[in-house]
Length: 137
Image (cartoon, rainbow, N blue to C red):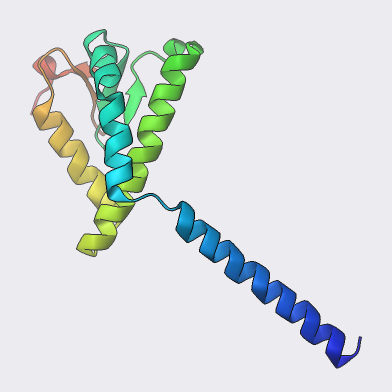
């Protein structure tokens, strides 16, 4: 290949990379957009928690208390959407505080455990589901 072809290929590749980066930035969610989506799901999340279908995990996410519940497509979508937004929210919060998303998520998990109602299901580090009223601190 001659130099002109190489420059054209390099230029096209660089342009594609820059375009991809700009598109990703344009699609990036703001903290407010994430919070808005989570607020819209909050009633459904609370209802599923009250019904014992989902619970909070120590690492700041929600999961189905009984894996068989995931055969319900709507519940599976609710959990997936909530966790996707929580992960994004944790990434943004961690970046702002200069910490890791994992550390930020663990702090959120602790807060969720503290704020849980006695009948809510929680999944501590040991991986077993327990209602808050039965959780040994």
